Length: 172
Image (cartoon, rainbow, N blue to C red; front, side):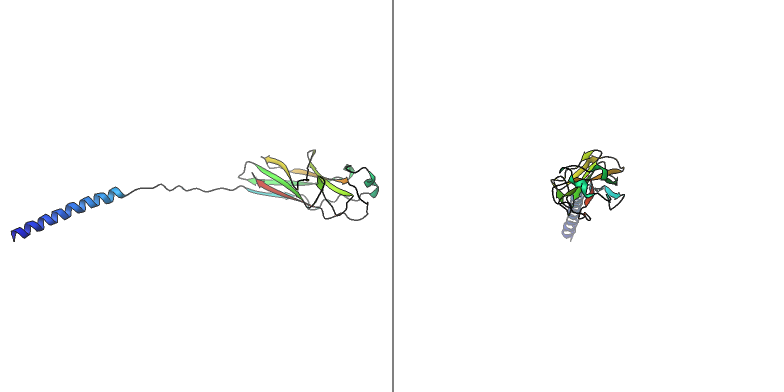
């Protein structure tokens, strides 16, 4: 019985030693990992306009007997765009015309187009759109001028329509 007792003691001690080694290995296998937490804050931009209709008033048909390309500055109108961006350093205002006639906005009449300018800069819509003040950095009103331009074509009385420009603001 002594022999069995000694073997049992040796077995218990061996089991204890093995479990100690296993526990040390389990502790050594533990790791820590840092988890990076990020968020992307997107600039929020909005804009408003002073009017959604620029009425250039009555223009006499005789004004369109001037040479094609002549700007009829006496009949110029305007509207104001008020951009507002939060969280962005720079933004662009883009103007996209409903149709194009040369570098100006096309109309439903061949003899007239509407040219757009701001701060004595004429916008060229011949490529389909024009970026106004790329990389603007401060909010504030932007005045846009609309001036009728004489084009070739038969002069007709009536309302000139189907002309608009879409203004979009984008954080850059």
